[in-house]
Structure formats: structure tokens, C-alpha cells
Image 1 (tube, rainbow, N blue to C red):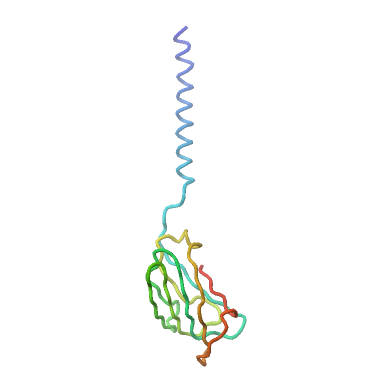
Image 2: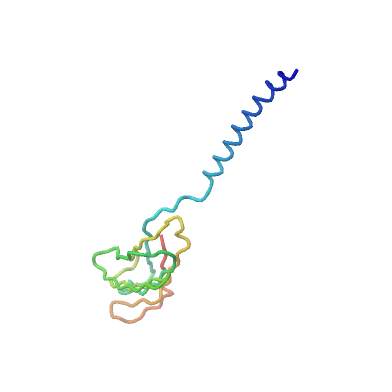
Length: 136
């Protein structure tokens, strides 16, 4: 009678162990994705006239290696802590103006861009409300 109990519980133990192993492996795969270093892009758009110079502020952890997207643009930057200030000089009505490296592109939504000033080709300040800056 004892041998019947042992032979019945042994397959149940094996099945339970297999199910436990599957449950543990599926929990690991549903965790947060591994950090993926890469670049994010700041783009601007307007429904009005093109801007010729943009003063941008980007906030977020680990910002590095800022660069312009176009060889026709000049870039001046200042970084302190989690803030990058960038002046992009070059005519743009819509499109990418700045790229920067980050430790994890999966956290792109944690980076914030603010368009602080825009000037036209005559160096006159334009209202920033006529422009939109986003991080892609």
C-alpha cells in the first residue's frame, strides 16, 4: 500500500516542480526591459514662419554627446547636473534640430524639452507659443 502512495505522489511532485519552474521563468521575462543606450532627438515645428535660432532646455538623467542633426546648423551647449541648455543656430520651420545620447532610450518619456526662446532671421524674438518642441 505504501508503494502505491509513493508511485502516485512522485509524478505529482514532478509536475508541481515543472509548473513552478515555468512560473518563475515567466516572471523574469515580464520584468522591466534591460537598459538600452542610444540617442533621442529633439524636433521643432511651427505653423508660422521659420525660426533661425532656438534656445532649448532638456532635462533628464545621463544626457551626453549633444549634436546638431544638420551640418548647416551651429550648436552651443551648456550642461549642469541633469540639465542641458542648447542654442541651435540655423533656419528650421519643421524638423529635427538636436540629438543627444542617453543611458536608456526605453525611458524617453522621462526627458523633458522646453523651448525657451526663438528668433527669426532678422534676430528679432518670435513668440515661443508659435513653435512646438518634442523629444522622439
